[in-house]
Length: 429
Image 1 (cartoon, rainbow, N blue to C red):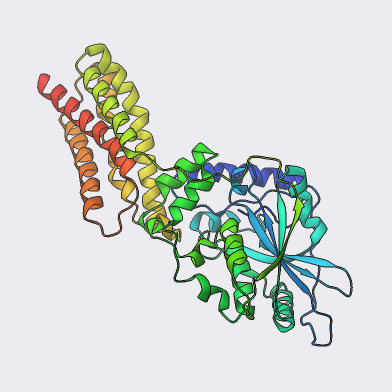
Image 2: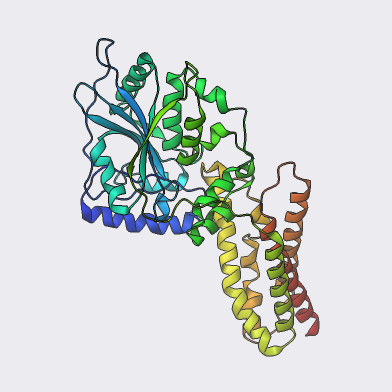
């Protein structure tokens, strides 16, 4: 979601980007990622801000700058920042909560553990537009209708927050990110008035719904979110919580009223046109289509298992399948037991993809060599199939089930067909 970072040498930036992309390919298999940032073509200059704005000064103009999603995976969610326009100096500062330093010694370990340190930076408005103009991403500003005291309070608080000793915060991809920080800055000035208008309302969307919608243009990113998010991601959000997505925050602000009962947004100003694909809409998953594919694959597995040549091919297919399934299962366990990625905890996809698959690898190897898979492998495949059945039962009895019925529909028939084939091969020898 965030596209900015502190300036650092180009050579180091390229190396860091390469390492970060490799880590994303691994972690996106199971976790709601913290979005990596892209280097600015012209690194923004971080400016110092006064610690306070006195009552005798002119009233600053407050706006929310909304940046539409980009085409690179870490830009898919869009971005936003708070603009403070000083009428005396004519200077406009963008207060951007999306900065982090990938050259920190513990950056990689924090990234893996889900303990990222982000910071607020005060950036000249023109510098903050450079990247978006070059990438063809639309930018607009929602200028707010605030009382003078509220506008000064926001300007003062952001200036104080941007000081080096106050700027850092612990980033949470869903609950405490760059967009929720912008939301909270406005709400504090309204004395909780923004939250009161939306906290009890819901559109029925879940965290997973929004993550999958925005990741859908990148299939592998969509796949990583869908497998990696656990049942906590399927809890319905209030509109207040939906503001972790910049577009949803903009919708809230446009509908909101200020302290005097007038629309909170006085004016929308389009700064840059959006010249690339627009933000995607949601598409319903048809679990029964996945089930048809699962049944079709299961029939092929059973057919191949009845033939000697087909058994060899089946063994060759099961080797990489079980390697990958075991790896994903181990990663899901690590994210649950060893990290702070709460949205990945207690993932029910562990019933379908788990490290037990590694125990069946010798059986696949034996089939590849034209031999019976063996009693051990047959029992393991039966256990894997029973785990898939357990996953379906858990989903049925859960008050808030994980939205993984499509994965159950796809993989349960396949696991059952493999277990049947191995049991038959075992008894045939």
